[in-house]
Length: 349
Image 1 (cartoon, one colour):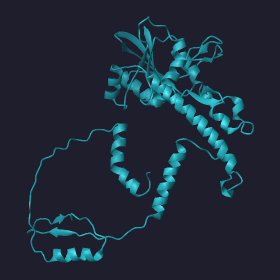
Image 2 (image 1 turned 90 degrees about the horizontal axis):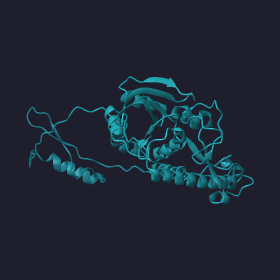
Image 3 (image 1 turned 120 degrees about the vertical axis):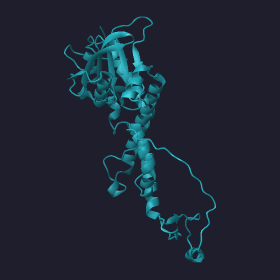
């Protein structure tokens, strides 16, 4: 029986997806790195009976950094970090042994994904889970970061998977927006391929973030030290995302602090007819900022004894029972309902 390895972005997703696809019949065990579990069950894939192994990573498998000698602040000019300093891929969290967890124990010195690996015979981890698998289905998040993690996983597992036929597709990508039975089964029935261009765009962004962030952090930390007393911090960080976001927060804070409330008046009128409940009317002008003008409208309204109905419109609406919210819909509804309130009170920028 052939084996399908499926990889999600975090352990909780792997558990939920395996439970849905196995209809609750999967067996689970801890992976050899202690952080990720493996969920197994049998089923059908590409018209054949297979054994499924569902597991996960914990976010990015690899991270980008400068080679060792460029990490010395005193000996390296920050300007060199823009172009001269070479970078290298490292395991994002070495303690998790994620590459080993995804692969089989590769022979000593075998090159995997352009990186020379020296692995001992007792390595264990994603290595053991991919050994002897025939297909891989990638259940990473459906954004560019998830696409990038897809290829990090592939770099680790493809060298140790069984080789498929010449024209046989062995790598599949699942696209989903929520962890519901319907979405997960639709994704499984409409598998595609990972997008390398989107993954490469993340590689480019990571390098830009690294070079710009490190260069400016080192420069401004050294520049500001000793000049502004309470800013004499050991590190004043800069980031292409965090610094503009800080600017938005400061701008919003300044607007809130400088806001001067202005008094206004509104006209509220109610129409009574017999014993019926009173009808509250909305003023088309909404409000006025001049009290005398507002008082004039009040006096005009008080002299009127009757109200004329100029038009009546009626329509029927049907409101269905609310559906359970998936994560995407919950965020959309929450933003729609709370966005203005949070913005007005300065809690959202």
